[in-house]
Image (cartoon, rainbow, N blue to C red; front, side, top):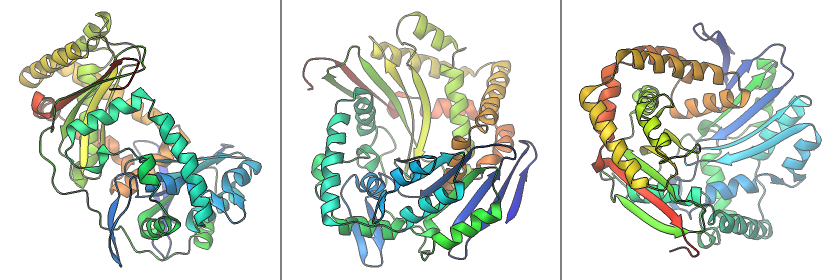
Length: 425
């Protein structure tokens, strides 16, 4: 395996690729008793329409999430229970653009790695097991419909986007998952769970060559690469609507204020993420004048958060939490962004926040889970995430100021609000 050294971070990562195209990353941490493995595919909630050798497939919403659940069921039993009995803490998630399966353990690493690679690579579905899972996930969807934090986020996305599937719940709906069959799952697994569309990352005191060898034994499928996907054509540049308001059984109003941003090109992806993070920190970080005014004025609470997200074909910045006056939050944010975009900000503030953001990124490398997922996500995005020191160093005051002036405007914005009420409306 090739050893990639990142001197500025004091990190090194071993990289290898199986003959069938599966990339394997191993970050060796000598002396640690814990191991973490993450096996992921470039397939998520937005990937509903895609091309196979049999032509274009148009699948129901929620298949990626449904498939994540179903893969744990094998002919030999439930993989979650098998791994837990062997000392592992396993789990999985589906995002808009990726599905990942992982475990951490302090014993039985090789056995657990074999189980992980085996059940993800070798699916087993029956009409009866699919019908049973439809009932389970249907209950999960019903419970999720009552989660106002999730609902206000999707309300925002429906305002920002006209047709991009990011508007659609990752889990789908009761109606959409009712359309899923065992053949649907086999088709999607065959398209997306091929070595050329996947990645394995491992962190811990392990032998990189041994990890590569085990992967070679278990992941034997043929690489068919990254399937072509259809997200519905070009989106309007600006938000398609600017306001959404409804009621739910919540104790206090919830809001999400978001800004539609052009998805960056692959070569600009890492830097754009860092620029967006710095822009958010300058405007909304704990030490910013705007945050002090919002918090001290009782306009936001401690559950306030913000961040930049990008997925295939879309990108956005969002801020939100509880507020009795979300329109006032929007007004003050627009004013602060306009002033900062026109007049700029102090060089010392920029340097201080840049240093703090860099320090946060370095400290997050201490997390096995964070590092493994970031390495995998970076590979699937075509980005070397551990090159962030160089990207950080190249960011200028002007770039951050231009980002604020270009994207944090009323034309790009939408405000979604959920207010207290006995019945949803």
